[in-house]
Length: 153
Length: 37
Image 1 (cartoon, rainbow over the protein chains, first blue to last red):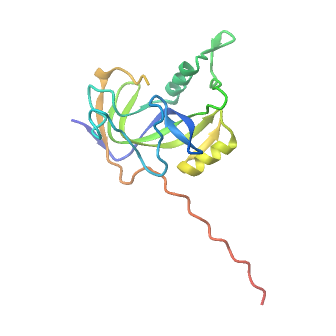
Image 2: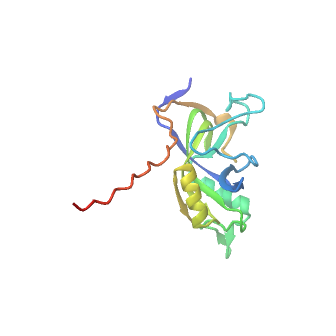
Image 3: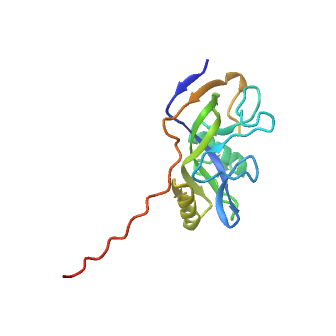
Protein backbone atom coordinates (compact mmCIF):
# COMPACT_ATOMS: atom_id res chain seq x y z
CA UNK A 1 0.00 0.00 0.00
CA UNK A 2 1.43 3.37 -0.94
CA UNK A 3 1.61 6.51 1.16
CA UNK A 4 -0.41 9.40 -0.35
CA UNK A 5 0.57 13.05 0.02
CA UNK A 6 -0.38 16.37 -1.59
CA UNK A 7 2.99 18.05 -0.96
CA UNK A 8 5.72 17.49 -3.55
CA UNK A 9 8.88 15.81 -2.32
CA UNK A 10 11.99 17.97 -2.55
CA UNK A 11 15.10 16.11 -3.68
CA UNK A 12 18.60 17.15 -4.73
CA UNK A 13 20.38 16.37 -7.97
CA UNK A 14 22.83 17.50 -10.64
CA UNK A 15 22.31 18.63 -14.22
CA UNK A 16 24.67 19.39 -17.04
CA UNK A 17 24.11 22.86 -18.47
CA UNK A 18 24.49 22.60 -22.21
CA UNK A 19 23.64 24.53 -25.34
CA UNK A 20 20.64 23.33 -27.31
CA UNK A 21 20.03 25.45 -30.42
CA UNK A 22 21.98 28.35 -28.87
CA UNK A 23 20.00 28.16 -25.61
CA UNK A 24 21.47 26.98 -22.32
CA UNK A 25 19.29 24.21 -20.93
CA UNK A 26 19.37 21.73 -18.08
CA UNK A 27 20.31 18.29 -19.27
CA UNK A 28 20.02 15.04 -17.37
CA UNK A 29 23.25 14.13 -15.63
CA UNK A 30 23.43 10.49 -16.57
CA UNK A 31 21.16 10.36 -19.66
CA UNK A 32 23.04 12.29 -22.30
CA UNK A 33 21.31 14.88 -24.45
CA UNK A 34 18.02 14.62 -22.58
CA UNK A 35 17.00 18.23 -22.12
CA UNK A 36 14.62 19.27 -19.32
CA UNK A 37 11.65 21.31 -20.57
CA UNK A 38 11.09 24.85 -19.28
CA UNK A 39 7.67 25.79 -17.94
CA UNK A 40 6.35 22.25 -17.94
CA UNK A 41 7.10 19.11 -15.95
CA UNK A 42 9.76 16.64 -16.95
CA UNK A 43 8.09 13.24 -17.30
CA UNK A 44 9.80 9.90 -16.71
CA UNK A 45 9.83 7.60 -19.70
CA UNK A 46 11.13 4.08 -19.95
CA UNK A 47 12.01 2.05 -23.05
CA UNK A 48 10.23 -0.93 -21.47
CA UNK A 49 7.44 0.60 -19.36
CA UNK A 50 6.85 3.77 -21.41
CA UNK A 51 5.07 6.35 -19.23
CA UNK A 52 4.58 3.73 -16.49
CA UNK A 53 8.01 4.68 -15.05
CA UNK A 54 9.17 4.40 -12.31
CA UNK A 55 8.56 0.69 -11.86
CA UNK A 56 9.67 -1.61 -9.03
CA UNK A 57 12.54 -3.98 -9.88
CA UNK A 58 13.65 -1.73 -12.72
CA UNK A 59 15.89 1.33 -12.76
CA UNK A 60 13.63 3.75 -14.64
CA UNK A 61 12.39 7.11 -13.37
CA UNK A 62 13.75 10.57 -12.59
CA UNK A 63 16.47 10.30 -9.97
CA UNK A 64 17.17 12.59 -7.04
CA UNK A 65 19.01 12.31 -3.73
CA UNK A 66 17.44 13.04 -0.36
CA UNK A 67 20.08 15.56 0.67
CA UNK A 68 22.34 18.19 -0.87
CA UNK A 69 25.36 16.49 0.70
CA UNK A 70 24.67 13.31 -1.31
CA UNK A 71 24.39 15.31 -4.55
CA UNK A 72 27.68 17.05 -3.72
CA UNK A 73 29.29 13.65 -3.16
CA UNK A 74 28.26 12.60 -6.67
CA UNK A 75 29.80 15.80 -8.04
CA UNK A 76 33.10 14.99 -6.29
CA UNK A 77 33.03 11.46 -7.70
CA UNK A 78 32.27 12.85 -11.19
CA UNK A 79 35.06 15.44 -11.16
CA UNK A 80 37.48 13.02 -9.50
CA UNK A 81 38.39 15.78 -7.03
CA UNK A 82 37.81 14.40 -3.53
CA UNK A 83 40.81 15.59 -1.58
CA UNK A 84 42.63 18.87 -1.22
CA UNK A 85 45.94 19.13 0.59
CA UNK A 86 45.44 15.69 2.07
CA UNK A 87 41.99 16.35 3.56
CA UNK A 88 38.47 15.65 2.30
CA UNK A 89 37.30 18.36 -0.09
CA UNK A 90 34.72 20.43 1.81
CA UNK A 91 34.05 22.96 -0.93
CA UNK A 92 32.48 22.18 -4.28
CA UNK A 93 35.17 20.96 -6.66
CA UNK A 94 35.95 22.90 -9.84
CA UNK A 95 34.36 21.63 -13.05
CA UNK A 96 35.89 21.63 -16.54
CA UNK A 97 35.93 25.06 -18.15
CA UNK A 98 33.01 25.58 -20.50
CA UNK A 99 31.13 22.62 -18.97
CA UNK A 100 28.93 24.17 -16.28
CA UNK A 101 26.99 21.98 -13.91
CA UNK A 102 23.90 22.87 -11.89
CA UNK A 103 23.42 21.49 -8.40
CA UNK A 104 19.94 22.06 -7.09
CA UNK A 105 16.75 21.05 -5.43
CA UNK A 106 13.99 19.52 -7.49
CA UNK A 107 10.26 19.05 -6.90
CA UNK A 108 9.16 15.45 -7.37
CA UNK A 109 5.59 14.27 -7.64
CA UNK A 110 3.29 11.67 -9.15
CA UNK A 111 4.38 8.14 -8.30
CA UNK A 112 7.63 8.09 -6.32
CA UNK A 113 9.73 5.17 -5.16
CA UNK A 114 11.84 6.10 -2.14
CA UNK A 115 15.02 4.35 -1.05
CA UNK A 116 17.33 5.16 1.83
CA UNK A 117 19.41 7.71 -0.11
CA UNK A 118 17.00 9.04 -2.72
CA UNK A 119 14.05 8.75 -5.04
CA UNK A 120 12.88 7.66 -8.47
CA UNK A 121 9.97 9.84 -9.54
CA UNK A 122 7.37 10.10 -12.27
CA UNK A 123 7.36 13.93 -12.61
CA UNK A 124 9.91 16.60 -11.73
CA UNK A 125 10.68 20.28 -12.05
CA UNK A 126 13.74 22.20 -10.78
CA UNK A 127 13.08 24.21 -7.60
CA UNK A 128 16.34 26.12 -7.04
CA UNK A 129 19.68 25.98 -8.84
CA UNK A 130 23.31 26.64 -7.91
CA UNK A 131 25.44 27.08 -11.00
CA UNK A 132 29.00 25.76 -10.85
CA UNK A 133 31.49 26.77 -13.51
CA UNK A 134 29.12 29.17 -15.24
CA UNK A 135 28.77 32.93 -15.30
CA UNK A 136 26.10 35.55 -14.61
CA UNK A 137 24.90 35.50 -18.22
CA UNK A 138 24.18 31.76 -18.13
CA UNK A 139 22.62 32.09 -14.65
CA UNK A 140 20.27 34.82 -15.92
CA UNK A 141 19.39 32.76 -18.97
CA UNK A 142 18.48 29.73 -16.81
CA UNK A 143 16.58 31.94 -14.36
CA UNK A 144 14.46 33.42 -17.15
CA UNK A 145 13.95 30.13 -18.94
CA UNK A 146 13.01 27.92 -15.98
CA UNK A 147 11.53 30.68 -13.76
CA UNK A 148 13.48 29.50 -10.69
CA UNK A 149 16.17 31.08 -8.50
CA UNK A 150 19.69 30.53 -9.86
CA UNK A 151 22.79 31.46 -7.83
CA UNK A 152 26.39 31.40 -8.95
CA UNK A 153 28.69 29.25 -6.81
CA UNK B 1 23.14 8.01 -9.44
CA UNK B 2 23.38 5.78 -6.40
CA UNK B 3 20.16 6.30 -4.49
CA UNK B 4 20.45 3.16 -2.41
CA UNK B 5 19.45 -0.47 -2.27
CA UNK B 6 16.38 -1.55 -4.30
CA UNK B 7 15.16 -3.84 -1.48
CA UNK B 8 14.43 -0.82 0.71
CA UNK B 9 12.17 0.80 -1.87
CA UNK B 10 8.74 2.02 -0.76
CA UNK B 11 6.12 3.79 -2.81
CA UNK B 12 4.81 7.31 -2.21
CA UNK B 13 2.06 8.84 -4.29
CA UNK B 14 2.10 12.62 -4.54
CA UNK B 15 -1.07 14.25 -5.81
CA UNK B 16 -0.33 17.98 -5.57
CA UNK B 17 -3.28 20.38 -5.59
CA UNK B 18 -1.34 22.44 -8.08
CA UNK B 19 1.63 21.33 -10.17
CA UNK B 20 4.86 22.79 -8.77
CA UNK B 21 5.86 24.28 -12.10
CA UNK B 22 6.37 28.05 -11.94
CA UNK B 23 4.46 30.11 -14.46
CA UNK B 24 6.05 32.96 -16.39
CA UNK B 25 6.77 36.08 -14.36
CA UNK B 26 4.09 38.76 -14.70
CA UNK B 27 5.02 41.53 -17.07
CA UNK B 28 4.92 44.93 -15.42
CA UNK B 29 2.84 47.51 -17.23
CA UNK B 30 4.75 50.76 -17.81
CA UNK B 31 3.34 53.57 -15.74
CA UNK B 32 2.46 56.56 -17.89
CA UNK B 33 4.01 59.87 -17.02
CA UNK B 34 1.49 62.26 -15.61
CA UNK B 35 0.47 64.77 -18.23
CA UNK B 36 0.75 68.35 -16.95
CA UNK B 37 -2.54 70.22 -17.05
